[in-house]
Amino acid sequence: MNKANEVQPGLMLQGTCIDTGQTTVLEKGKSYFLFPNGPIHFYVSKFPNRDSHRGCFSGKYFQIITDTGENKSKRFQNIEMGENPFEQLSLFD
Image (cartoon, rainbow, N blue to C red; front, top):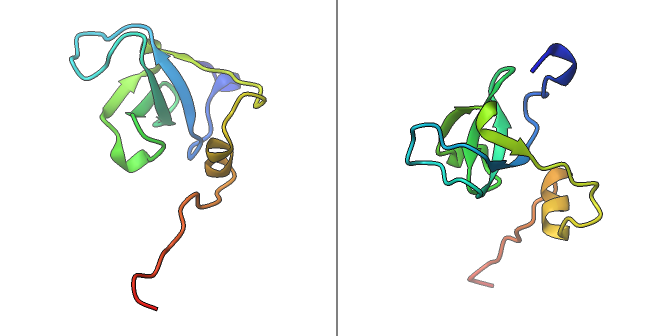
């Protein structure tokens, strides 16, 4: 990746694994949430949470999913906008 294509820190992307390298953590063809870690590496997670990552891998193992936003679910859009998709419930009223 060159400077023009560099991803901003804090951004969440989605990508499909195109090569597992020599790891058993990744599955070829499976989609993951990707969180930038430097110019060419990503923290890889099954969930849209950077803290639940499965490791840090080179970007060469992933094809970034570029969606125009028309097909995204409302829940994913809320997560991108920083809204909390969960509701705090009280057990005792």
